[in-house]
Each structure stands twice: as C-alpha cells, then as structure tokens.
Length: 173
Image 1 (cartoon, rainbow, N blue to C red):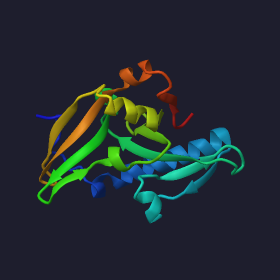
Image 2: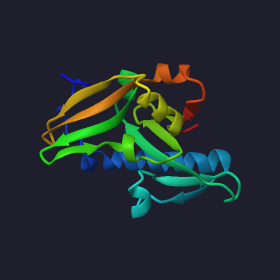
Image 3: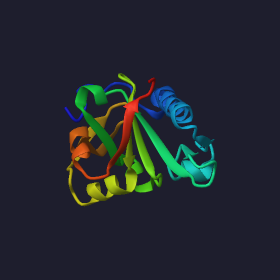
C-alpha cells in the first residue's frame, strides 16, 4: 500500500500547514526559553522559502546564525521513521523534492503526537542519503493524484550515525 497505511488521507500543504506552523512556533519558543536564542523568522521571505529555511537562530547575541527547516510529522510516533522527499511525479513531470533544495544547516523533525523534536545535521544526513544508506520508496498521493518518491529513515539508524543527531528533547519541558 505504500509507506503509510493511510496514504489516501488528505495530506497536502494546505491541510498540513497548521501542523507545520505549530512545529515551527513550538521549536522557536523552546530555543528562546531554554537557550535564550535570538530568532529571525524568515518563513515568509521568498529567498529563504526557495531554500526551504523557516528560521535562523543565534545563541551568541546575533554574532552567528544557524538556519533551520522544521518538518512536523504526525506519523513518527507510530512508524519510528522520518521521511525525506526525493521527488513528486505530477502530470507536468518530475519535480524535485526538498532533499534537493533545502539549504538549512539543521533539519528539525517534530513529532506532533508526543511533542518530541530532533535536530539533525542536514549536510551529514543528506550525504548519507546520497551515499545510498537508505533505499527510495514510492507512494501514491491520492489527493494530488500523483506519485512520490521518498527515503524512509528509521530514527534508530540516525542515532547510530556519528554526529547526525545533534539534539533532541520534548518541546514542553
């Protein structure tokens, strides 16, 4: 049936935006509260959106900024996986997934069922994907009437890799 047993559920940018907004807001608030970070929200700035960057943070009073892309997932707690989008195949043809255009330093996954979040070194994770550590998987997106190609990556694998998981915690500690 594909990656998700409920792959026909309504999952589009429009239907998942509220969940995604929740993840972004919760992570930014966590960083401010726990580490007194300065936050620069750039999610609505086109040059950052094109690079799939939601916000920048600084722990050094603005003297060094780190870029973050937040992905909020409501299936992580069930599957134990993260999913990285490789491509979508639409009527107009192949469209690269965010694997190819995300330029954030940190890829953050938020599990919105149990409020855990994970900071991954995106460059290291992307390198492992490109080395072929995980296989591509297909799924049918019934809502958008297209097929997708993703990497399904077990969280356990990421914890076994050196310096890929930078940090994880519960959002509301």
